[in-house]
Length: 606
Ligand code: AGP
Image (cartoon, rainbow, N blue to C red; front, side):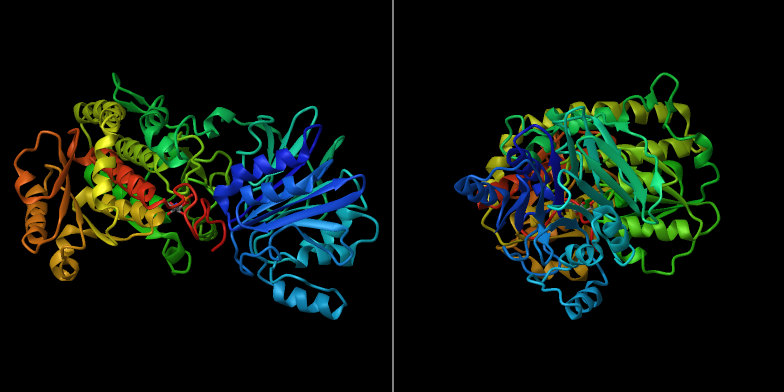
C-alpha cells in the first residue's frame, strides 16, 4: 500500500509533489522520495522516514524541477531505507519509476536481468521495472513499457518518465488504483483523488490492464496488448475542502465528529418517511429472490458485516454469514442459488476483498459492493454498488465509514423486509423515523466528548483491555478493541460477553480493565451478570449504558451514558464513545493517531 504521484504543469513541481505526497501519506509512510526533471537532467531525493523529512532534505538542496514523480512507501520487499525508497532507476539513470503493488515474479526477472548484465542496487521488487524498460528501450518509451508489462505478474501500478523523452509520462494500472486529473494547464496522476482535488474534478480512472501516455499536449490510452483505447472522463463530486483537517488536531477526530453529517448524507434521498419507502439507485429487480447473504470484508468493514448479520436476521429474516475476505478467498465456498455476496469496503481497493469479489464472479455469484470511494476497483467490478456518502476518510482508523456502512446495511435490511413482506408499514416507518434521528443523537453525545477525554486520562497507562458486548453490540466490542489497539498500540480483545466463563475471565485482574456495552436491550440482564463476574474478581469496569440508567452504577468503576434508541439501532451510538476513548488514549500516549506504526489506510496488497 503505497502512494504514487506525477505532475507536469506551470506550478512549482517540487511543492506539488510534496503536498501531494502528504495527502497520500496515509497510504504508507515508512520512506519516501521524488525525482524531477530540470533542463533534461534528473534529480532524485529519497529518505527513510516521513514526507516532512523528505521536504527538509529537499529544502536543504535547493532543487528545481520542471516536472516529476513521487512516492510514499509501505515496505513489502526490502526494509524501509533510503536505498529501497522509490523512485527507482535503470542502470544508465535515464528511466525512473514509482510503483505500488507487489511483482510476484520479481526474483525470476531480477535474476534474468542480472545475468543480462544489469546492476541492481536495492532489495525491492520494484527495481525490475526500470531495468526491464531499459532492456526493451529502443528509442520509444511507450513501446518499451508495453513489452515490460507483458512480463510482470502480480500487482503493478506504476508511473515512468525518462530523460530521453522529455515531458512524457507513462502510467500503468494493474491492481492498485491510478487516476489521471487534468485541466487546461496541467496534468496530475495519483493513487487516489486526495492530491488531485486541488487541481481539478475532471479525472480518468484507469482500469486494470490499461496504460496512459500523456504530456502537456496529449493524452492517449492503451491496453496491455498495445491497442489504443477510448476512455470517458468523469467529474468527481468531492471537494478539496473535504480533505482538510478544518481545525481538528487529527483527521481521525474530525472524521469522528463528521459522523452525524456523513450518516445524514448516506441515508438522505434513500428513504421517504411518509410512504415508508427505501430507494436505492440500483434496479430493484437486482434484489429479487435473495435467499441468503454473504458479507465479505476486512477489519472494521468486517465488523460492519457482523452488525449487518443481526440487522438481516432481526428485520428481514434473511439468513446471512460473515467472512474475513482473507479467509474467504481461499475457501471452496459454494455459490447457492439466490445468494447475494456483499463486499463491504471503505477504500474499495482492499486486496483480499477485491480478490474475493473476483472469485465469486468467477463462480457466477451475484455481487453487491458497499463502498465509500467512488469508482474504486470493488465498486467498478461489483454487479451493483451502494455508496456510503462519508466523504474522504483520511485517518487510518476507520470511523465515519463504519457508521455509514451500518446505515446502508440497515436500509438494505428494511428494503428486503419490505420486498419480502416481512415488515408492517407502521414498523418500517418507525425504524426509518428512528434512523433519521440517530445523527441528532450522535451530535448530542459528541457534545460531551470531553468526558471521554477525562476518562481516557485515567486509563491510558494500562497495557491490556477487554471489550465485552452481546447480541448486536458484540461486533461493537470487536470494533472498539480494534480502534484501541491500532492507534494506541495497547493490547485489546473484543469478546462476546457470554464467552467470559470459557476462558477470558482468567485475564481479569486489577491491571486489565473491561469495557462493557450494557444497553437495556434483550440481553441486558445477561451482560449485568458478566459485569458482576468481572467486578467481583477485582476488575475495573467501564460500562456504556443508556443515559437514564441509574441502577448499574453500583458495580462499575465508570459509566459512559449515551442516548437511548431502538435496541437494534444501538450500534450507531455505542461505537462513538469507543472511537473517542481510543483516540484520547492514543493522544495521551503520544502515538501517531492518523498514521499509526506498521499500518496504512488502504491494504492493496495481500
Ligand atoms: C480500520 O480502522 C482499519 N484501518 C482496517 O481494519 C480497515 O477497516 C480494513 O483494512 C478494511 O479496509 P476497507 O474498508 O477499505 O476495505
